[in-house]
Image 1 (cartoon, rainbow, N blue to C red):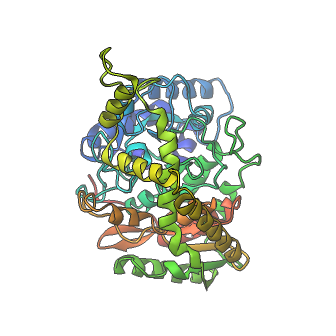
Image 2 (image 1 turned 120 degrees about the vertical axis):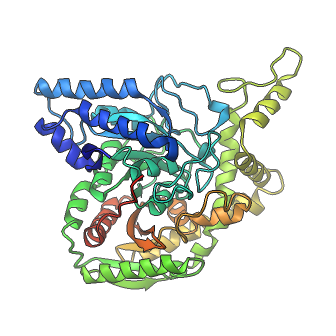
Length: 491
């Protein structure tokens, strides 16, 4: 690993701004790192070498001309392959989009370019963001740099593994039920789900429109905050975008890094305090709670009784919305087309295309969702799940009347071996047991490393009220300052 790849994003931006290193040198170091290790990690689906170096040269030219540079100018970033990138493949991890090159950039990517970051390429993911291990990618699984025989989480395992492998200092993910936070937890990195509507979904290949939330991934809390600031804010192209500025997450991260949480009241979610979690995960979490107390936080137990219904409610709502969203992949408008021989009917071509283009997990969720929305079952399944969603939101509202933020383990277990859970979908779904409530509520959540269990990373989750993203950054940065970073074994 070269020296430049070991720096944080904030440090790299400083080097570039001061002229101590060029953006091209920083970019080339990370491209070299990708060449050296990604054949084993498989974090990337596409590396845009020419585009990255061109963007880096542009940053260097603007700096030489005396132009003002943003706080992340010249810093490399990897983007989950669920966000459209003009002229660069966007597959969503699916064969049905294997050859698609979008004609436009998503808002997130457009803002990354405007901030002067250098896009290295697109990262691997579970197909259409449906999965918790990145084993459901049509292009093969990603491996955890801590132990290459284990999963890096999902659906955004490529984005988190690229960070842990030092292939990039920053990456972008999307979180529908935990797909940023859970990979962050099992790879020892920081993963953030912003408030729903706080980051734009324009150009995000939709899975579940009322849940999908793009967000930042990094190795430090401050880096995540800087990236959050760059990509967040109102977007008139997204009807669900909140017309309000991003809270001052960077200032909150810097404040928290001082290690003082005096006056902060934290709630441990009683329903998530033990059931279903591995002993090592619980031990690391309890040690982290003690650390937060020593930093001055007041920690109390809070009950959110309807959280226990979050998992079944999610697996009715999300598949129902995916059934609707994925209807557009029909072999007619774009993407894969199978069986168009001039003899088969339109319906036969659609059926053949979807059979060949969708993987087993996508088919499973489309069928679940179609059933839940079908005549005679809508009220019994989808309608009831939405009522549960309302109850969960009320639990959050009640809890935040008592505390500033909620804390829990991010995921019940450490990274499991590749192939260990693919035969049992329910066991796979349990990976998101602690993260799903925030998506149903719409509030922000962050996973920050808090310890090790059996030599593998454990994450602590901080959940905050909607549009109070700065609260979780302060708590996460304080914990990070006390426990320090966790470095995976050398690849």
